[in-house]
Length: 141
Image (cartoon, rainbow, N blue to C red; front, side, top):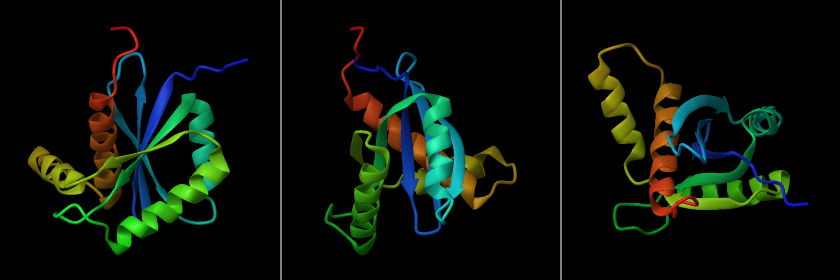
């Protein structure tokens, strides 16, 4: 029996932290969810989020340089994606993450309230997910 999940998760992968955003497939409005430390507890914490949020698809921000070619971070994210696919068994999509962290930091700065590095990561994940959703045809259209 085919299971239809209600949400998609966006991830902004860094070497220390991973920003996470979620969007309902019905509303298609991504929101920052959390930031997880990339350590031995990461996959257990991610599994809990996937279950709680009823996630069926993962979208990973893929970093590239300004010319669009791969960098050392691109390779690190590709390695992470391989591990994630093996672990979760969920479909994983890559989404260009050009300047999402800078955009997130500028937005948080403009709000004039204190924020942490993890807030930038989670908001960047929201932009990654928003860009991916904008490229997907609507099921109800």
